Length: 291
Image 1 (tube, helix red, strand yellow):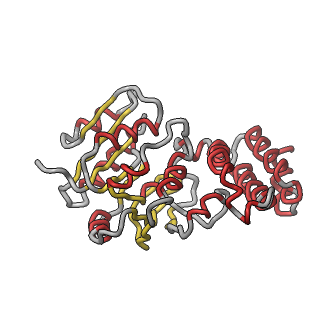
Image 2: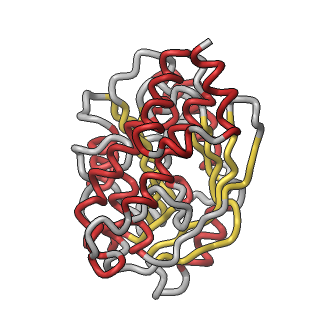
Image 3: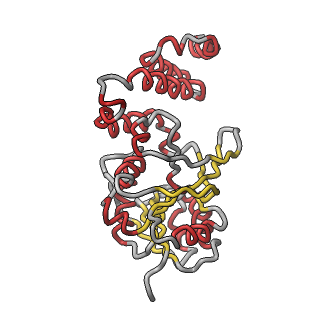
């Protein structure tokens, strides 16, 4: 058999209740020219039983050093021309592969990104999250809204991996954004204004569960590049960063069900911008937390 066109790489750990939907979303593309490599970190739930129902899977269950390590194993083992990284709790939208084939038929296209349909588990229902990316320098403003790169809706040519290398295994929450930063140094991102993936924003997702850590990790990644913005004036981004971070922590505080967690996030918001915390719109939150 020749090399497949698509290589789908799925890191997996105790997400068996979502894995079947992930696998079936690929099979239902009606494009047989793919391989699906699942690297599982010795899950103790139904993951192995679900995987056994799909003999086409290349399923490996062995200890790993985290999500980045699992994806890197997929990068190294994959044989396809187009690399797809799909977490076990996400899916591809119907017709995604057909749209990707059309986009990558242009030899100049090396990276493609699109929109996602996000399914929330907090009662907010479903939304279409649009992709957005114009300048790689916007990534440095990691707290802002100028970049919307949704990981399951990003696809790249094998040559991109050869050039950019592997994911950083010391990162656990913002490993994708650091990779987009490296890729964007040499490659242009082509936007497809269509839904390419379905993202389950479920409570066990680590970025949902530990969003504050994700913010800290983005700070660690991009702070060395702050001097590339605004002519390198020291502290020029600080007011903007503090205000946006305070908003993020306030969102976490409002959403927290545990009073101790809400107080912790409110304190983090206060450390960034006391005036923002004291706005009338937040007084109800303060009363709720300290009552």
